[in-house]
Length: 567
Figure 1 (cartoon, rainbow, N blue to C red):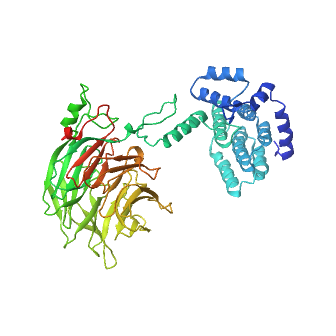
Figure 2: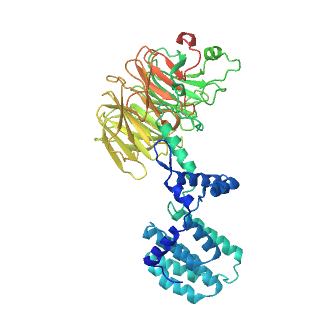
């Protein structure tokens, strides 16, 4: 065996070129498609690979024979034959002759071949040849001393193996493993990436989904026509109106499992609503056995389970524990209370020297919570469910906290400080990032914890990434927010959408890729303070308004319903 040189490579390459048949040369010049962007021989080669991967070996072989095109290149076909036969001299020459191969890739491929070659020489007891390859061939690759030393160490370790007793079947499997490693290393057109046709089709489908403003399902997309969803994929119509609150409804939030809805009101109560058990998995709404949607709608999708009466002041905020067994309620300028969801009983009232709670959030374990205060210097407290203080961030320099949230992994605490800035505090590394956001009033985190949105009184919603890679936010506009706190949320499959209330009594829905709303929903008669998208039923949305009602929104139905019939 001898080291290859570039002269040998050039000569071999010329010899390879003369091996191409006329049919292959003709195929290589033909193009397909109305724009002439697809090379015919590449297209056929990808189809052949796909047929093999799907198990249609006879069809693939027939297409290879009829087209004169093989899904394996001439170079790799030679390599495969040489490696399986253990013809290492020809194998290294073939690698040296491959055109347009980067030197680093060529050296890495040769290193893999030499590794197998060394093992087989040692197995035959030819230590001298193995040592010669290590000293001359491997060293000439210039892959670094560390890699060469590592190979030498592996040779020394083989002394403890019973060489010479490894049968041909094991050697053949090792050679197949070498081919698999080379397949991962060698670039196109020598080899096609695995399942190339599936990747191309999936990329095209993904591009169509990304351009579809209403896509809101995980169902497989048909290849028979271009994909485009209609507005019936998202909630656009009122399907139920909840009228049990006696004053303005300030907050609404679905439970994490999507089975409950909690609301809070200036009537000093909070309410827990339970969803119906039998619902359409696609729409998130009840099934109708007789086709009578009207009857199902009148019966209602949500029923009142508990009315929580204990606060003396309006209830401004609620927060579900991640396991949905507990609910926190924040009294406006008052105390924080913990409730048992199943019984509706108050389990604990958090009192801490006049600590006025403005917002609260849970940690993933459902055992710890954080609360922010609207009083300057009070800051943020972390408590357990019994009111025991775990940690506090307070002091002279601590401004008032308007809103806060904890990422689903429990690693980051995001807070709005004095309407001027957003702070992302990493609880693991104790690092902090500060974002200047004037007029910020509320925030919400995506289900995957990668993004958060901030509502501003300047009539914009800004989306930031939690990781801090973005220098500027994505901005959404069109709604009205100037005087009041308006709360928005992520929603739909993969948090694709953003929904928000508005001071003009409407609900706005954006696709995250578009700064202007794709839907504006009318129905409320006064300011919409808060919206919540069901995390398990992607076509179900709730909105809370100063008109004393909560509206449940669903996809457009074949038969239009008048809101009056839904009370």
